[in-house]
Image (cartoon, rainbow, N blue to C red):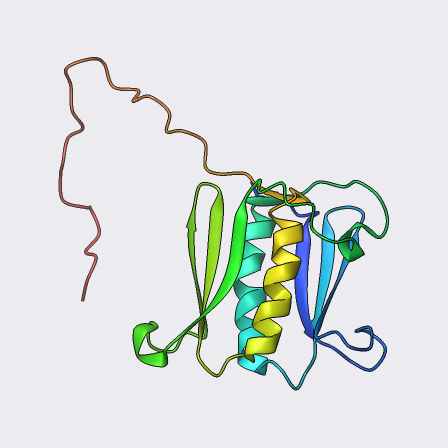
Length: 171
């Protein structure tokens, strides 16, 4: 069952939401909430929308979970603990799935966000990667990878019966 009390929301930043000289600002809030604000001249609206769509699944289903420590922790520099890896990689458009601005590649201990060229600036990518080094690398948010599969409920030596579905699947 999804954890309905965690969320990460991405926003185009408005004046005052991003400190001067920054392109991204993360407000980590109690209760598993984070608001991520991007400088609007450095990211396309479609990328922000797709990040919200994808993280609704990742965070909403508790595949990534916030580990609360103290106020202001997001503004501290990375400690270099290398607990997990998360990065943005700008990828040529022809190497991306059609109609996708962002495509995550995730495995145990890592999440690489492949971003279609033109979706964000190199400067935003660099700043976000520094932020992700703090978030994932220092374990402020941790990956709760899938649990191992449960053993089969079938008695030893038996395999499941394969049969046609009762309802036609295609028309």
